Structures are given as structure tokens and as C-alpha cells.
Length: 126
Image 1 (cartoon, rainbow, N blue to C red):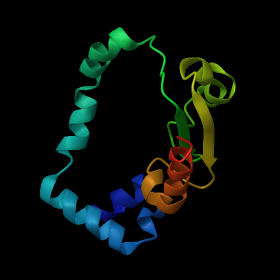
Image 2: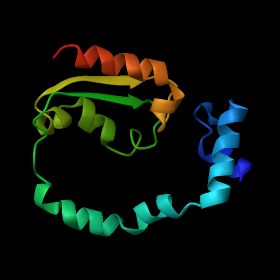
Image 3: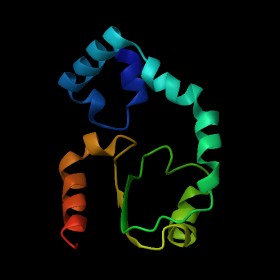
Image 4: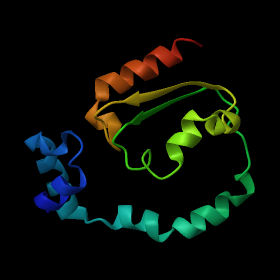
């Protein structure tokens, strides 16, 4: 279990902090991966249910924060979409895109204080 988690989360703090890894190992040994797996099992249904909003624009002020090592940020075409104007078209009130170097998919855990600072700075604008 520990080896698998270290492999899955090798880009972030998870393998650097023994307490974090111990927590996840203990939790997953008790509960298994059913919750996480069910998300993917139900993916087609989620897409079907969300289809009516596929072309909807996000009409609220937004700050997008992502780690440069996040696998989803590195999917083919995503960076062009985010930085080339497509994201701004779909999120007209996009205030800022923040890329945090060296952070991965679990950025709120990997860089908690930095993420909190960005969220706070965004919220106080309103």
C-alpha cells in the first residue's frame, strides 16, 4: 500500500512526510478505494447528467490555481486552452490563472499555505 501511494503521489509532499503517508495507508486499509473507484465507474453517467450544461459559461468571478505537475494540466491541449484564450471565453469573469511550480494534483495539500494565500487574496477583492 505504501509503495503504491508513494508512486501515485510522487510529485508532491506525500512521500516526503511519513505522517501523511501513514494516515493515507491506515485510511485506505480500513475503507479501501471504493469511493475513488466509484467516481470513475460513474464517469459516463456524470457526463450524461452534465450534458445540458456543456456549453454553459462560468458566470462568477474565478481564480484558477493549478500545479505545473498536475497531470490534468499536462493533458494534450490543456495549456493552450488555458493560456490561449479558450478558458477565458468559457469563464468570462476569470480574474487570474496561477501556476504553482513543483506542485501536483493535490495542490491544496502540497502547498496549503500558498493556496490559502491565493484564495484569501481573491476573496478580499469582494
